[in-house]
Length: 245
Image (cartoon, rainbow, N blue to C red):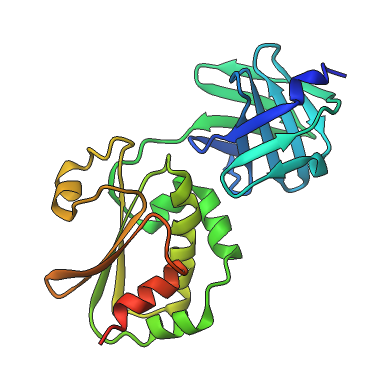
């Protein structure tokens, strides 16, 4: 067992890193940093497991998955429980590697993403968005309203790969638009930096001050936007904007 007292703390989610298992991105994985950034908590979905990576000692240990409590703000709590040693981990440059049950696990920084991007590229870099979108069950009435939109509509989504709130909102939007399957609605994605300074031209032209911002356009102008949290739901707010008299 590793020291028990080291676990009695709060861990903050780190969404700037990507977990690969056997070379493939794992969108169900969640990573959390300890308060002193000397350890990481890795929660895997398949098979369900929770691991503590001690970066100073270079070890990987297991804790009971049901002992990990994660709230909606991306904070994990873990009580004072023992850790079972599993393996050693190696840090090379900016990557962390270790083996788990004959599987290779790698933790690497997310590739940089600034400017307009495709949905495919977004889901490659943020596989957790694909997992969350698949699990989301949008409001049926709102989806029906989006399906019934007859005017050509452009939705611009300004988000950050670093943004905790974007992780909650953007996948819901992706799923709602997918289910609406309305060719009249086109969605464009723009990734911004943490200072909201890049891409400069887009941020300035659309007056982006918060993330995420979902901007709805018809014709040559904006008809509404959603900033940060939706009032009801992202699909409900979009339907409200698009069905105004």
